Length: 317
Image 1 (cartoon, one colour):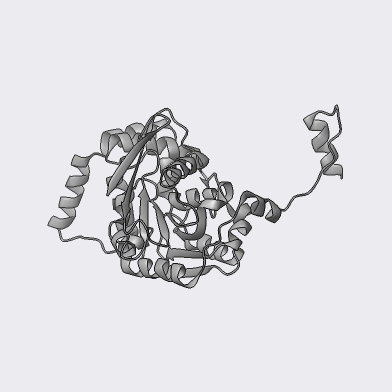
Image 2 (cartoon, helix red, strand yellow; image 1 turned 90 degrees about the vertical axis):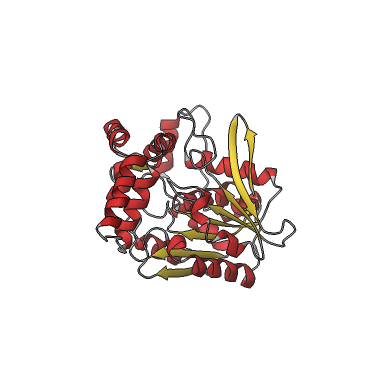
């Protein structure tokens, strides 16, 4: 069922499936240039037993795509929080792909009561390096103009028909992933919103925003990390490092898969999520629990000192 609501002047859209009175709720967060449609083969498998909510992030799908809006990761997480508040959901199993993984990690930090388990699929925020396509999205304005002129439903239709005509369907996951991304850019409103978002989280050297300094906070949760070993956008090394940093986490490698393992192997991903739900208890944390887990070094604040004086004194101490 597709639903939406106007919250603070923005339309927030989501879909729901499965029994509303189910014991467990699973929240699906898509990646950059996607929508809840990316979960179309996973969602019905999960909905056989669980309540499933797929949220369209700001600038994506049926959610508003304002040009003048805050597209930071905390802002995207806030919109997801608003949807879950409307639906009275806490302690959910939150599944995030790519950008959605970064949003899920942000939610774990800001509103720990919302996240009971965490599944990161080719997640953003776990390392700086990216493939060249993501760096291109963060390039200056001329890239946006170039895409406006060259990437459209018509041109992408030509590419598809040409591939089929000459029998080149490209099973190589790297090429398939590039094509999926290019096709998503064909929608002009989505493209402009996404370029604005991308320039906030990506730069010439890769990801500007990271969560590795707070991964220890996810160590209290049941966590599964999933990655395709041929991901051309976010290297699998990010996932391996996160797995090593989160005690007790599970790490699943999809061989021969690219950046969209949930599209390449929906049944396998659904099985991983269902197994995590079946074999673990959700860990619903409160803000106080998170504060106790922070690595805090007290400093002495001296009345009348400027921030510069205080910083120098802290370094000396």
